[in-house]
Amino acid sequence: MASSRFKAHAQSPDDRDDRCDRFTAFDAATLYEAAGQKGMIDPAIRPAWPGARVCGLAATVECPPGDNLMLHIAVANAQPGVIVVATVGNYLSAGAWGEILTEAALARGIAGLVIDGAVRDIDAIREAAFPVFSRGLAIGSCTKERRGTLDLPIQFGGATVRPGDLIVGDADGLVVIDQERLDAVHETAVTRRRRESEIITQLREGRTTIELLGLDAIARTERTSESE
Image (cartoon, rainbow, N blue to C red):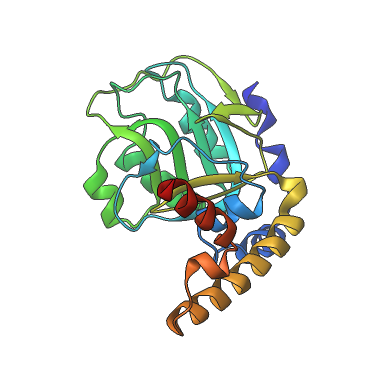
């Protein structure tokens, strides 16, 4: 299965940047809402260091528990700008990614790692400013012997991630956006941000969220129930 070599990412780096760059100004929560509250990744998968952010197209990897051979193969074959999205069979006692893979990824122009597993060497990763999201940290080591899969849909943190889907992550969490919906989600996100900006302006002018969000009827019902 490893021979697929990220076929979904065969487009040029410029094409990939055009698709992704417009999303960098949006936080993950806004994009989740704009996508119809779809695509949220398990909140337990967090930035491995403060300030880490990712935005790019997914290059998917599935590793057997305790073995990171496929991560090495993935990095060697990845196109610049992708986010490596990896599962490790729910194994959290070994750091499947560390300083060496980080340096290899930087040399290949990889834009980040999102892993449903553990990493290590986090001080070196932070110093290199390489964005990583992980479920945890572990100093245990991995073997490099068993094959898994590359460039196939994977179940990741409660969501399906396919090669070429958009991954966006920040301090609030991670969201995956289906590649076929990028234009529609972006348009909705722009509208949502404009509306939120208007609400904030009105709040600063003295109005309330009860008024602006149309919560009057519900609030009145609650007050009536309390008085009975």
